Every structure is written in structure tokens, then in C-alpha cells.
Length: 61
Image 1 (cartoon, rainbow, N blue to C red):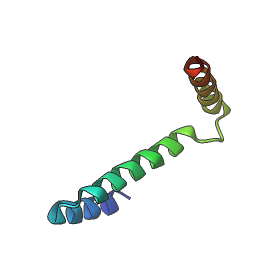
Image 2: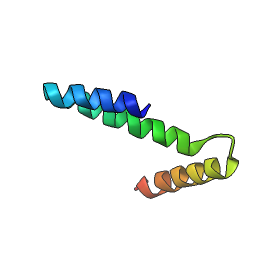
Image 3: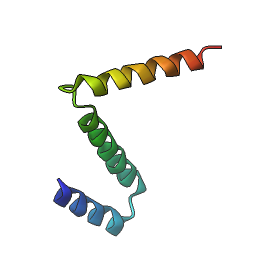
Image 4: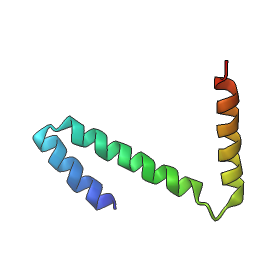
């Protein structure tokens, strides 16, 4: 996984492709986010649903 990132970052910086860099960063953030959730642990899932409910209640006018 890390070697994939190192290889891809090397290609990006060599070519200067900023869109590809953004895609890689977002993909890494999503992977870390889903790994953090880990649905086998219900406590983290409860924290997520609680925060989502609070966000919706705060966003209502």
C-alpha cells in the first residue's frame, strides 16, 4: 500500500498532474475513514450515527 503511494506520488510529481494528486489524497482519506469506522466495533458506529444526527439537527433552520 505504501509502496503504491510512493510510486504514484513519484509519477505525479514528475508529470506535475495536480488532479491525480488530489484523487490520490482523497482516495487515501476515504480508505483511512472506512478503516477507522470498522463496522465490527459498534461503539464507533454509534458515535458516527450520533454525530450525523447532531449535524442534521444543527443544519435545520
